[in-house]
Image (cartoon, rainbow, N blue to C red; front, side, top):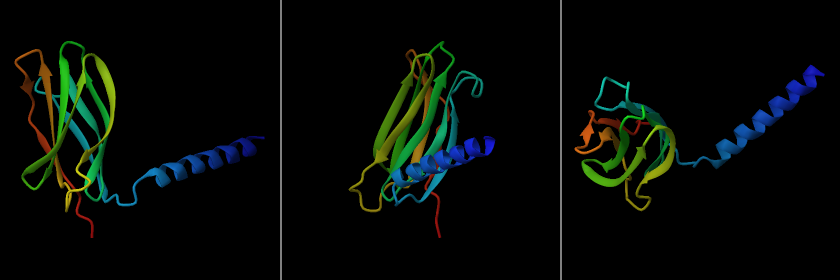
Length: 141
């Protein structure tokens, strides 16, 4: 009986994994993990973390933004091609955590984006931000 349950679980997991792989763009060229803190006490009060999945001209950002509930946290994601800003997305969290999942970049941009700068800030005004961190597209052979 346990072998049947185990076999059914393996089949289900394989089917789910296959559908996730099938849903991923064929042009993905690597991933970058990120963890960016806000300006207060390291990551004790606000942060964002997750991964950037790089595609041919764009990227998908997946993860989570969170805060301690005292302020509003804003995670800012800026996509660049070289030194030129191409696209920007921001996520605000009032209390607790918020899952993030969005595409960034310009699918029509020749060459695409190659860097994403992430900054975590808090409000109320004036907005105070932590140090931005840049994540570059991995070089694939």
